[in-house]
Length: 459
Ligand SMILES: Cc1ncc(COP(=O)(O)O)c(C=O)c1O
Image 1 (cartoon, rainbow, N blue to C red):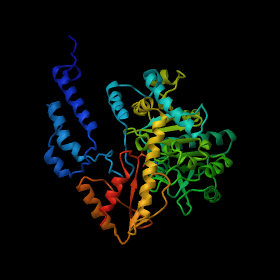
Image 2 (cartoon, helix red, strand yellow):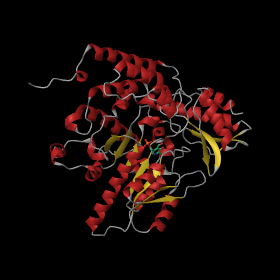
Image 3 (tube, protein in one colour):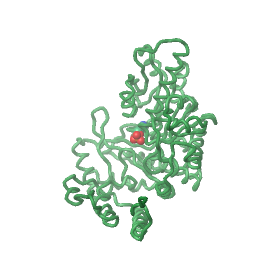
Image 4 (cartoon, rainbow, N blue to C red):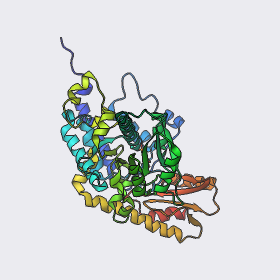
């Protein structure tokens, strides 16, 4: 007697009905224009409305889907709503979202060429395109990881591994403590990477507009002493969308033989737009960079493109060794798991690949450019309003502003009202202790008209 395939793995009238119900749900969700903003609910509310969902005998798919559609999904913010302009929103294209469904349905293992060659090939097409935009040689390559946090960590691990190997080669002992330099306005993930790696993070001063300059890096290096292995520049800070002086920073890093990483998680997409391309002068100097398609390249969560000038250096740092993996690691194939702190992976670069293959690069340049146009228009509008003050001149697609006389509580009350009305998510923020608020514009459905409407509610 051999065991039989349990029902939940075979196609039955029930699973077929469920398939149709799920497709219908996805179709409806994607057809909203605009999608309802929705809002978080309290734990008590969810416990009451959706009690005991995980039971010994199961609810049945149709009932579980109903619960999701009626209770759980409306308790999640729609980050692709045109009025969702806080943090960094997301705005996947239809093609990218649709293809995410295909990825989900396909059980592709994205860690190795042997198991996922076709998908890995397509992902690599996208990474090569990004490398070309940045100005890296054809030999550049990398991997799509879960997010910018993991991308930054993986790049820095590769950088330290290279520095360690180089010192060993030269017969120089390891430093007492490894260190890397970034700007005081760099993303929190860098501090987190430093903690995970147990290295020191040196935050160099920014200029009056919030940029890291070559001189600031040089001063930080002069003070740092032994052990600096990398310099990180930010190509679009999270808070203000400011681009560091990438060429100056790169020049200093190269002069000192240091790994140069660019964190372009949010902003590097703006290299595609004619209005902002010049801000990215010097990217070709980098040893690694990241850019998150789930931020400004119109792909669904979660995806960070991590690219190295010399992928061999990353491979030396990241390849996992085990008897069960030998057949993969000894094959000489391009295995994405070798290029980051990951092994099993979803082929999360495919939604972007499909959308790019569908629409072409020019459509991406146009969409990013349109976000920048909206940013410029709303900036002009804010400048023209007596009651509003820009905190800094926007460079990419983030606009930070204050309402004269408002305290933090005024911003909070206003923000709550906007959320309650389903108009938008615009949360309070602050700079140097002064409360403000900000628009992060990465959604082509976010129009100047809508932002003006939001500003008109600031009373
Ligand atoms: C500049 C920058 N770097 C890194 C990150 C972290 O990316 P993720 O949230 O995808 O981990 C962000 C997120 O906003 C960011 O803006």
